[in-house]
Image (cartoon, rainbow, N blue to C red; front, side, top):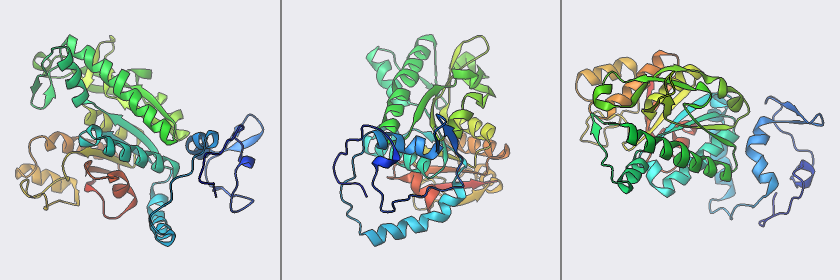
Length: 347
């Protein structure tokens, strides 16, 4: 048990820590690697405990009674066992990106999920931030059917904001919270190769994904680091394109054989009645989704998100969820409870 104060740890070694059990046992089933030829280190320990080992600050006293906390943890065990070692793609945007409180909640959820053994890939856009910077430069944002019209000047701002500002800010927050994040864009390592949109005459430098090469991601994921990916890609000539973040997340999920794709949104999920927030569809299969589209119950901005989920499911992703990013700890609700935080679509 750690004392409720900052502990000076000049050398990050296990012997410097005090455990209730003098011979702590970490799960032997987890993959291990040789570190410096001296000790066997564990990717979970490397990714989740490194920051804590270097500077440990014990949390403030819990308001929830200990027996209640233990009960909650025990109830989460089956879900942890189900997802441990599996890849989960999270697309981040909407209200969860604009609110500092919700942003902190998402970051905390990511770190917890990584520490219990999920292989997290974090994909983000940054529309509001882009609009803010375009406004500072006197450039008026322009949209067509929900997609940003992207000329050369706008594309320059999109790249600067998503790759240089938003991405690095998220990486910093995750690292500060105790995990190890690595910032990338679709351009890095040929991760995403783009091609022009069929509507390029109207949309400009808005692209589609032609190819995904996950080689740069696999070492990061295998070591339980969290790749943070900005939705910018380049074509074979090096021209940059603005890529829809939902689309990028879906294609990455399919290529990596993800267990789950999660899209954080500003709505409760798929609704039976678009005018009734209480008509949430908790779970639905592909056939049911297509029927709702045909019946006009899924329309507007929800259609691209649903189509992204359907495409990823058709390529082997086990489940795809559209969840309410306005809920605190929506990721934990979706993954570690049977309640969920939105709509789960199954194949």
